[in-house]
Every structure is written in structure tokens, then in C-alpha cells.
Length: 125
Image (cartoon, rainbow, N blue to C red; front, top):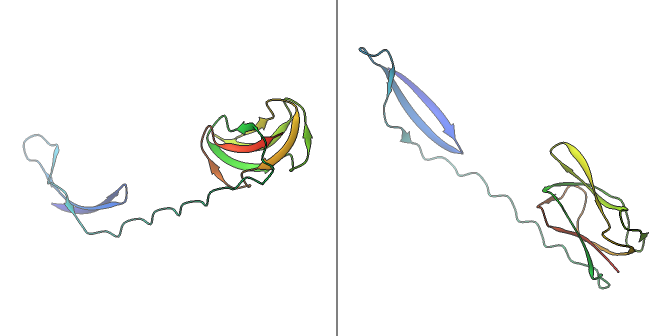
């Protein structure tokens, strides 16, 4: 018999393994769950507030990832297809572009923010 301690998804198990005589395959006893300290839940990110002059044209993330760079500041005139925010997803940098011509009214994210697909990153006027 051998005793092992195994952690799966933050749960700690003590497992006793016995070698089977007839089949050669080990027989595993039912795991006994130890009281483990639960992992700390990530702190909720504060809600981003749009500036008072937030625009009506939304610039949204096409994929989940992390904000790497803000490419256009508030007040900057952008043309359709110009990069507004750069995100990193699956080890690639992806520009999130202006859907139409306008002026950046608000930036609703910051470098380092984790974002989901469809998240509002900026607005344009």
C-alpha cells in the first residue's frame, strides 16, 4: 500500500493505492478529502466609467484577451479601420479598430485589463 496526497482543482485528496494480486492493475481506495483552505476568489474589477462625453459608436473586443496598449487617446480623430486598442489573445496582438470615422470620446479599459469578447473598450463620436 502506498499513500499519496493529490490536489485537483484546489481540492486536496489523500489516496491509498493497493497493488492487485490477480490482475496486476492497481486498485484505488476511495479518496478521503482533507479540509483545504479554499483558493481566494479573484477581486472583482471596478466598473469602468465612461467620460461625461461618451460617444454613441461602440468599439468592442472581438475576442477575449488582455489589453496590451491604448493606440488612440480621447480626442484623437480616427478613420474607419484605425487601431484604437491593441489586445493580446492566444499570444497574438490583435488591433481593435474603429468601426467608422469619428473622434475617440472615451477609453473604457486600461493596459493589463483582462477582457471578454464583446467587452466595450472605447466609444467614438
